[in-house]
Length: 228
Image (cartoon, rainbow, N blue to C red; front, side, top):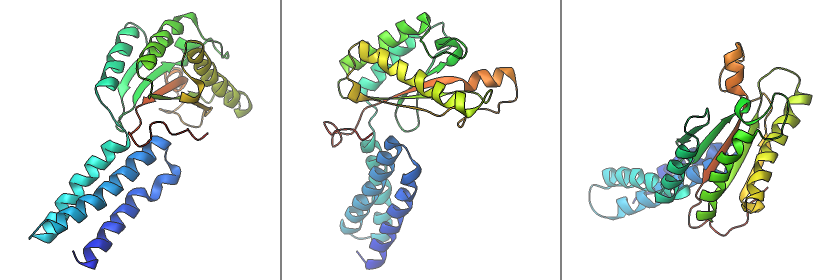
């Protein structure tokens, strides 16, 4: 393979990972996995025989796809978790979905999970979290991220600690149901990350939420301590 081809692959990896400083840990893993996969795939494609440029491009593309999946896995266990949570949240306003980067997302509208202006859990939320704790017990390597959000009513001095406390109370409830604290990270963003404009009562209700993300780390990440 020529130096030019190698240089091109290095540039591609640099572009894939340049934004990592502003990404979540999960997104970083996916981007870095994709970049590393592109290099390996490109090298193999270029070495494997004639038609070098075409083989290099195809190999890089395949390698990037494999690397991205390796950085954050969605498998049978995650699918089973999703189905269990869909059953547990049926008939509620809680939404369960698979994200683009292969996390299981549970979106809890704050009006469903909490009383207005309060951080203690509504009784209706507890069975849902009970089910989540059960699925996490069956998936001992899964990691959980809990994020609290508010609308823009009120000041940051009120909204920021409220969003953090709601996330922490969700995490605390999961811990009380047997989920190890070192598997859970929490944060509160106040009104800084709205899903929609805070211009109507309905839209403000959408922005008041707690989001839980459950991810299955790559084999290389399993067993490693989490950074906080």
